[in-house]
Length: 391
Ligand SMILES: *Cc1c(COP(=O)(O)O)cnc(C)c1O
Image (cartoon, rainbow, N blue to C red; front, side, top):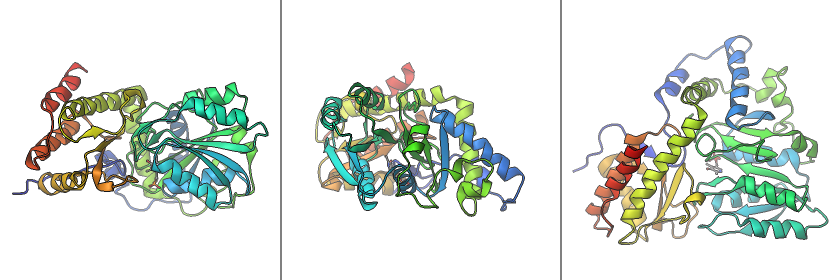
């Protein structure tokens, strides 16, 4: 008997759960795009987007998903024939590098595999060896959503400074912005990209590039009129924020989402994500004492607070996801970019997520492990509840 009727729960790492406030803000007639409220609303987003990235620099808004922000960021600073260093800790940084290659940029990759963060000593050695400063930019992903690894971005800047390398530091925070602490200016990040459908809790379709003066000065020949970030950050040219029709309803939704973050307080948002992630880890520590299930990232400081990747062995990953959805109305993430994909699953816990939702995910998993006869340790739910109780 299926017990899935009721409100479905999409616990994947993007798109994330959309708050009712965001849905309601979007449920309206088309606004006047020439003047008035929509212009004021758009202008009001800019300081809040800078605050959430902890930067005083520029932010450009694009109508497009995260891949659009990837291309926008690369094309504004690179020229054909330039070299970039990709620090791969999962599928997403590799994908960003492939996009650089498609622009005619030479890509050098240090691949850390799917279970480890960036090794800073190795980056330092690679940059120190680049005495001619061929490497124009270092590309890193803060949280790689395929592996759930979190990289030490502040540490990356420290080693770049130590070897006095002039490369730009470019970071993908698509999965981490508004979930895991990120401080663009304090950490010395030159370019950062994010999208609205993960920690920012808005339907997919709008993305952002934050950039500083050094990145703007780097300006290469890859940039085309549509992706050029300069007109998009000039408040006197409203239409060019979007180079066409504004994504009207997304802007209303995003305003509501940023209001929710402001009302809760960014520090509290980070603390909530951390505590809920710790509850999940505590459950998996118990489950994985027996049987095939293991957290993908062993070292807690290298784990994301927004997504958790789990290995469970073929074909349990697919069976488990099928059972959770069909029997309980819970959709979990696929083993994206992993081989074999059905040996993994992921839990998205980014954005509009609270303690009872996480206990619901964990309780559903407990039932699933029992129903499918997958060996597992006991005491997982008590351990998770203990983390929440102590918070
Ligand atoms: C989701 C995601 C992307 C891709 O974003 P799209 O909106 O799907 O194009 C890129 N990088 C990371 C880290 C992501 O989590």
